[in-house]
Length: 348
Image 1 (cartoon, rainbow, N blue to C red):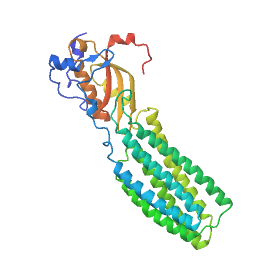
Image 2 (cartoon, helix red, strand yellow):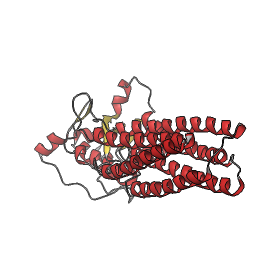
Image 3 (tube, helix red, strand yellow):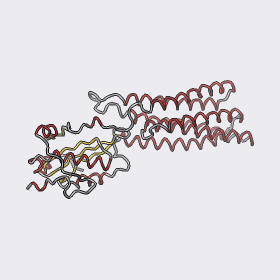
């Protein structure tokens, strides 16, 4: 095999993955950049400095403002419920309490995720935000089931419902939840943690709109089952939001490839480099929101290890992958073609 297998960076490469040939490395630079046989040093590629999504605590103040609005209204609603002896308003205050818990949990998860990595926690506690989102989804399911049971009972045995207090509290609730929704909409909802809190508030807004409509129907027609019907509509919306959260958080926790990323396309881009012979053990997953990661065993021409071009191949692999798929946290194990004979695990 000759050196022609290790082509310059610009030769026979697609325009999207090409570039000028890197400058030759000094022996010291080459030593710092050299890959070990069982992994890569990567001191030449400091991934710790990359920014993955929003900086820690960037959204805490939005969540704190929304929490203040929700807790303040919840206190008022409990007082009105006790004074008017309204079980419906007291039950809704319980729903507000679950919203407050969801937002407080989201704030706590942000604080936890901001802790630096160390010891056995090599990624820190960044997945705390994903767990918080999953818990928010589960909470929505539980609340939806409880509301559905109560709504069915009220359809069968409709209670006496006062339309006026129901309408007044619902309208105030709409205003408060619109304000809270507006605040959270300004936060970065690409974070599943923030999105989970946002969906809690949004479904609560739908609930108050439904309650207000039910209050008007009761005042106009006296049909008390309107409250139960509106509750069932809100239950459907809550389950829809819960499914979205659980599905997205489940993909992260089970380490599925990010949605919209085709593994075959990733493999194809890596194979576009003329020095690359094969790619196996390719894994693509998400550590937390906006932090996709990839690892792979990349088989390159044997001569690349003899003429010192392996570090340049590594540079181009990472540049190509980051440019096309926005993946900056990557780990590649470069292998000579003969190393495949020593691989015992099945290759993907």
